[in-house]
Image (cartoon, rainbow, N blue to C red; front, side):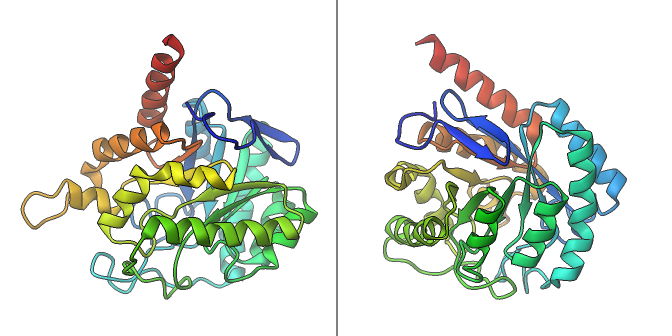
Length: 297
């Protein structure tokens, strides 16, 4: 399903690899935070986080994305948004978890969701294989040199503003063109620094209106011109809640699974290689059926 473009066939991450040729893969979200919009506070204890990682592994994920700082944007949906976390606190949250996952699941690709080079350095030393930078190197371009020095992979996500100041919605005349252009700049910075394994993410929900978010999924194939694997993070986001609204009230987070799966299916049909999600088993089932249908043709 995901081999319709010129993206590499394999994503190589410090000795581990992910075959991108035949089907999309699930990336399990593991937020070690007290304030993430969906699962904040559930996995702050290392043992709880490890149990969750083991559960996701049993459900079939090949990559787990560990985050120690919420990126909730400010605006009408989330109010003031997430509190800025110091690099020291972020390290204290994620490094023990990454170490435990690396020891317990040696074949698992571990992603560290951070834009701080110091945190990324500690995460890579702890056993992470990939850095997921939600600022797309806009905040700290030197992140690219660090990732290259470890021969790690790098996810570049499109967003506007900076963590702690990220607006929930920014008007755009052509959101697809803006995202492609911005990600192309980020890719260039990373490649000049020597990063060879790059994934792009359109940043669903980061500084986009609901209409923009839906348009990005519908036109995800435009990102193929960057010739990089594509990751999407749609899981339980507020746009899904608004689409499923009853009257003036958005669907609550607990009732967004089916809507998330619908958007995920469209994203994969448009060429997404990686799907970042809280709901691993339902997403795995969705992708398995989609893959079976495609292989039967």
